[in-house]
Amino acid sequence: MEDLRAFAIGPDRYTVVVGYDEKSVVEWFKKEAGISEEEFKEYDVSEYPMDKKVQLEGCPDKPSFVTTTREWMKDVTKFPAIAFWTE
Image (tube, rainbow, N blue to C red; front, side, top):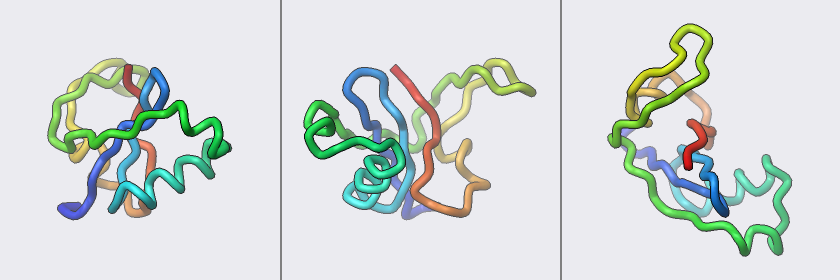
């Protein structure tokens, strides 16, 4: 988990994706989301702090709660993976 990094990817509303390096995370995201190289020119990519507190909403068992990306992703075993969406 220590080697993982998070990246905010998007043109306006950001998808936070966790992986080992920016290049593989971006390529995985483009493929999963079906985004072309041309479309991706409108996207920004920036590193997102793994330990920044974030309020998540919409989980069935917890409608709203505060956590960190690191804590939220602690049980995930396959990366890259989408953590959450943020604005």
